[in-house]
Length: 427
Ligand code: GDP
Ligand code: IMO
Ligand code: MG
Image 1: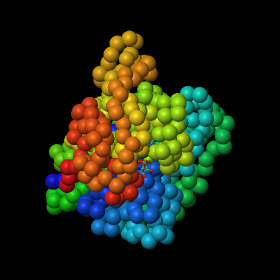
Image 2: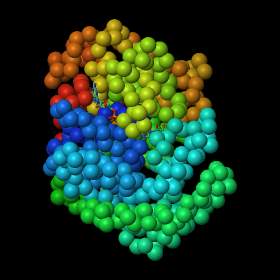
Image 3: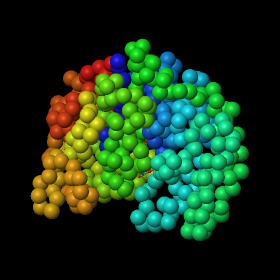
Image 4: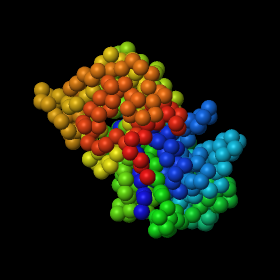
């Protein structure tokens, strides 16, 4: 019965890695269902800090089986370097399962990602350059390479040839790059086959059987709601569905199995890459949030754009994901502000708008309408219960909860596993 989805409620980097790791000790499976190594999930255990990209954060919990679902795109070279990095630090990764239907990020997908971004110039998306979009494009165009293709050389060769036919035309004629040879790609991919084999499984069957046996399965989203290809700020999005429905398609589990959908919500807002961001700050407050919050990309090292909390976005995330709970993170970062502005609505062409407009032109023009909430100056990083928080911090949380449309069931007051206030249990 207990299948939980944990996903980003904003533009990613909300603290999903920490939240997943926290629950990892009590769940049987942690499943990535979309995205790939564009994700950067930080987990802090004691004095150890881990940066995970492709692997589910549950890999750090010994009792838990980590799963890479069919909806994920897998770069084998990244996979093996991440695995060996963890093994060197004493983490056992032998339980990992990878769907045979997951698509492979090939070297030419990475090349295409980089050249198309360069070609877009000022209009670029600001992708992570990891080949994510082109790999999903190949999947939808039905010229993708799947993990299972590595086990049939003849099929693999035909598929790589088919994928490269059009790409080489594009690379040589449009982008002035050298053509990529089929044989070279096939050879590289076949080189991964034996090493990958012990992990490859029918993950759909495994997960459904686990749920039938009453095991606890946690689906860990990459990215965030506003980066969703359907529900995000298109075209400034990633090429998959981080929203709750993505867990069903990306893992092969029916929606009737999912009992809880937890939105990870930062107490302020950040975004990496291009695209609209109504509450973005360009002043000292933005700098302070970046500095205090350590807001620098785990994957690309880019500075994150920072702004105040946006309740319109939080309400939208509640709606499109059917959120049952929020996990509010990084409340500690807001300590020290006398007053904290919170965006409660937008003003668009002189009109007050309470909900996220579907029109991109409207969203690009949206100006935040702020309400000022009183701040606090006490250190909250040692607080273990809601009652231990200063009154103004309690009021801030309660106000966000009311505006956002789902209960806040946990609060992060620091990056560590134990720096969390649990209000309602997730399990
Ligand atoms: P993810 O991509 O959603 O997993 O988030 P990232 O790991 O990219 O970014 C979140 C950052 O915030 C990481 O450096 C975490 O260690 C850190 N973090 C998570 N929760 C908290 C919290 O409650 N307080 C503080 N100060 N840091 C946190
Ligand atoms: P986690 O899981 C924040 C952003 C990129 C870019 C856009 C498209 O750590 O929250 P892509 O390479 O996916 O085609 O880039 O999406 N992006 C993220 N931003 N956190 C992430 O992951 C992201 N993954 C992709 O910056 O704007
Ligand atoms: Mg991240």
